[in-house]
Length: 251
Image (cartoon, rainbow, N blue to C red; front, top):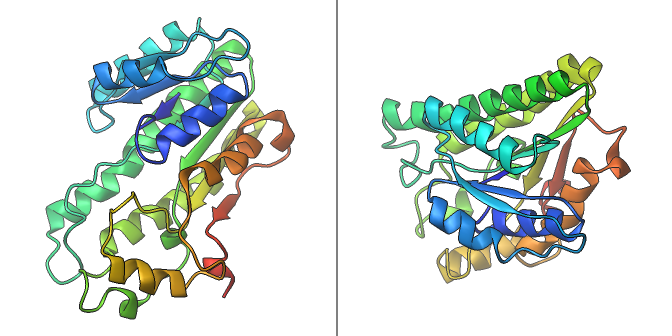
């Protein structure tokens, strides 16, 4: 299951898993949208993909959505990609973000944990291994550059940095406690992967200067890292944060 699985980055991750032969359950708030997208996914080995409604901010929706995903996957859910994020309040920075907006951002990690725990319990009940990938960010590891935003946009939101730093560390903590259950937990942290025409041209120019590869990332460039973390190719990898950032954090 990929939450936010039909979005900008989620769609590439859903497609990567489908191309590798997995049955993919696309989760998102709009069931019609997730089902329509799931119908476009490749099925090299005859997998029957599905789409479900899941609002991770709502407990009943998290539980019912997870259970529906298990049913669509014929009772066997092996992989969870926690990718969805509620972006409310991200247009505000450290000068004007409210306490409520800050708390709402941090609640994304609450949802990540609750869904992760559901998968762990499901895997244990089946005596089966499982893999959980939390989607972090390079901004969970390093601060942003003030000069990249000055005069163009609000500062990179402090509440987002706090959220993603917590995501990275939560992966380590869960990995240590759930390793005995054969449940691997890792974090995949993208660097700059803006939507097409999603940021001002001047900001993109400034951000590119901070990237050793001198360009923005493209969604399909997350595929290899995701497959490593979710497949048997990465069976001895847990508690790690894999950065896909064009070298941003190498400076």
